[in-house]
Length: 399
Image 1 (cartoon, one colour):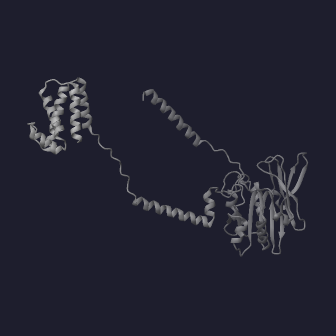
Image 2: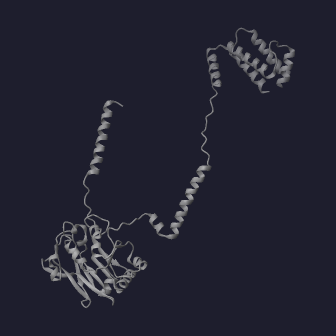
Image 3: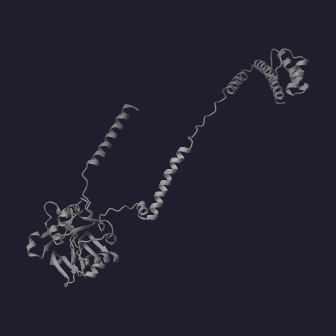
């Protein structure tokens, strides 16, 4: 590689490294996706709130990671608890609603803050929610408490908010704790309830419902702006809190096929047994299998190639006499080596012994010997004589 090519490669490599460093070190864009998860530190996560919940709890905060039906079915409580749901939308099915109602009927408290929630629980409580769809995230709204002593903790949400309110409530069992004041599209000021308490059952159980979940996100709790959210949570009884981390828009869900396998007991054990069997197979198979023996290529018979080359060289020069002499010498050496006969005299005794040992007839043997004597007596030979000698020798050896 020449010097110019090397310089070009160095420049390209430097540019790639610079681009990688710039990509790694550049500021990451803020994630404004709805989350409400306790683990998320993004603006719309609930990391700050979750870590401050012990202020409102008499003991360590419990966490529910499954559906509320599964969680309440598995757990038993001897003391009243407060169960907190915070998300942009919440919908409880029939079994979940039944579990929640039984939970509250036993004297516990359920706090729900959501822009829109529906299901059997809301139907049982005779509560319906209306969502304000105009200018989402930009409609300014004043969230106020009905208690005169809490007016200093009112808050005006000007951004990063969705406004919704209670369209209808059961006035016999519902206490309005806070309101939302906004302007509609005609700039008419409207005030509706957005924070209520609904008593349920005979054991002082209650639902505390709130329609501004964004007030509890990291964005609205930073920089000493937590007064409104803290005041809302102060309505919870002083008892242990259960934090729901399942009904969340930002809930971490593993969608791999392995998750389905491991969630089923039969499939899980089948998977484990298969993996264990595969490991055993690899271990024992690896010990018992002999390593591959490399194929060694046979050495080429260079003697044959050499002989052929030399023969072609003699033939191309037309030196038939030299070739005939060497063929006679090789043939006589063949007789001495294979038949153990002396070749200095070509008499009748020699011909008889050679015919007997080679299984040739006396006539053919005598003809070959006579031809050898004839050729040895000449000083110049032709191509036809060489061909004839070769035929006779080949015929003699094949017999």
